[in-house]
Image 1 (tube, rainbow, N blue to C red):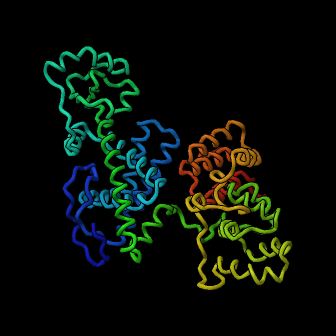
Image 2 (spheres, one colour; image 1 turned 135 degrees about the vertical axis):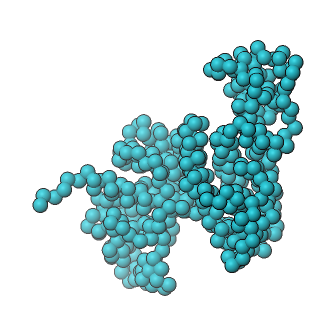
Image 3 (cartoon, rainbow, N blue to C red; image 1 turned 180 degrees about the horizontal axis):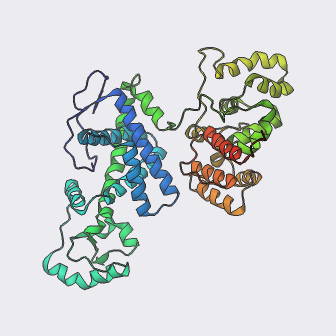
Length: 449
């Protein structure tokens, strides 16, 4: 796959020879426009993050099928079938490059791509599923004739034990080494005999997904070698910055500009911090009020989140209590004006998204970062209790934290505090703030005329 400048386009209508559900066994030989390299990857990333959220919420297989179908239509569907398949393939290989760069990234990508493949496969008709098995070149033969007839009664018992009316013995069964379908063996959904599992055509998904995951796992290791030995340095001025940024990309609305709910007045800020700040910003604000100082990471995280009419006056009021006016003007004032586009390039910098906050690494004396990731369990429980969470709500949040679903933990906190669902999930502190303000203002009685 070669990435080219946008003025050249040679394959937009030439689909790579592939089934409707690609197996991504080899990188395609095609040229890709530079903007598509990034945009296609972002669209697929939206799908994978939606899958991650669905799994974290423990949706059942049928609900996940519906979710995947919806996500795919929303983010990956194109009117031209060949271009849509190319987008599918290109986006997968770009994200393979993005997520090969560390064990943590590889683990997440492997799990999400495998889950995506599983549910896309489940949505295919049985004829398409069998064609995909053929594309994989799996060395399994269908059980036929006398062998199938001899197993008919036992296959029927297995089927009926899981609520199936028929044993489906007229369907194709595959004779497979039992270790290749561990999920079916664990749930007793297959007949075992002499080290083999007899897998029905309706259960092909388990057989294919095992092969898919194994192949992708090995491919990520090889991709990492290519990335570290050649690609990263060779593409340092073009693709490398894109690749390194994509794994922490924020995919939601732009909060660099304020809207009707964003501005906070100085006289209301203490009350608003308690009613509408997410835990990460509430903690920073409380520490600022307590210590009259924040280190650089904390100033950046809280400062870009706040939308104040007079940000300089706010920071001056706090910092001068500790460092004095002269030192504040000398060491801090310029940086604050710079963040709000008042100095330097005059760029109004974008507030940090959850992905960036979660991956930050606060040191001793720092208060920035994500409390769901960086707090001890006792400190986090105490903070959640101060936000008003019940024991049940707190345990639900802590369960997500223990499983490293930090954004979902924040989402559950939001839902517990405001008594409403947040199906889109919390992806940005400013999103949390604005959604809470909408809820609170909708409950405020209108002033008499």
